[in-house]
Amino acid sequence: MNAAKALWLARRGRFGALFGLVTVLLFRRNLYYERQLRREGDLAKRSVHGYEMCLDTADSGIARTLLSYGTHEQRSVSVFRDELRALADDVSGDLTVLDVGANVGYFALMAASVLGERATVHAIEPAPEHVTLLERNVALNDYEDRITVERCALGDKNVAAELRLAERANCHTVHVPPVAPASDGDALPDGADRTASPRPSDDTVSVPQVTGDRFLAGRDVAPEDVNVVRMDVEGYETAVMAGLTDVLDASGPLVLYFEFHS
Image 1 (cartoon, one colour):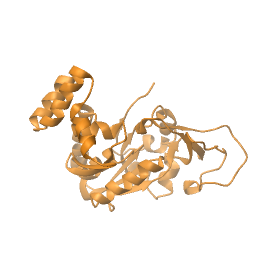
Image 2 (tube, helix red, strand yellow):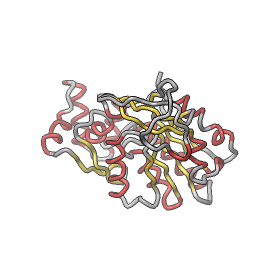
Image 3 (tube, helix red, strand yellow):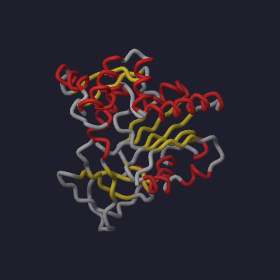
Image 4 (tube, helix red, strand yellow):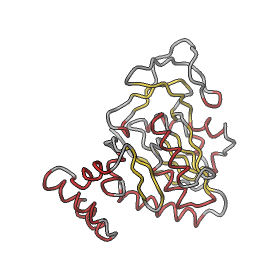
């Protein structure tokens, strides 16, 4: 895998990133990344796969990978981009994408870039700090007409949930507390039922959760019109898929791209 990454970087002239990869293998430290941190402030702007992204230099997750190498999950991303291009060739009309767990927009921007003006990307992200950067990255690329940012979570029921915050920003997890009496708090999207009452702490934040099918119905999107579902939800995949039965049962062309977590 390191050899493939090194070859990919060399072919694109990313010799600084290649140097960083070598130092990781030799010293378990990415000296190229460390040098960038010394030169940047809290945010760094980078060109990634042809679009622009603002990245949090304090993030040890996807931002660190993008600052170090200019790409993330390159082998699977290459396949994903090929599938998006094939989809664009096969479908003559509009294209709808669900990006579940959109983080700061790496995949949402990619889908909008590859699919072009026919695309509508619903970038769904529950973490407030991610939503702020996600909206900034959408505006940075003038993609407001292609990407809508939604601060909520998708799951198997319509409830108030909580987001458990991890040290690495791309490892937050959604959790639905036990059923509790209704209470005031964040508005739930599109008629979700308040059947749980999360208790935010320093390590959790409240987040509205809705099924994917209800999310789409609230936006007048027919299940068969959804062409792409991309998700990275840190072990919550089964719940998200259970709420997308109408989409999975529909007859339209559908690209599924997601990580499994055990």
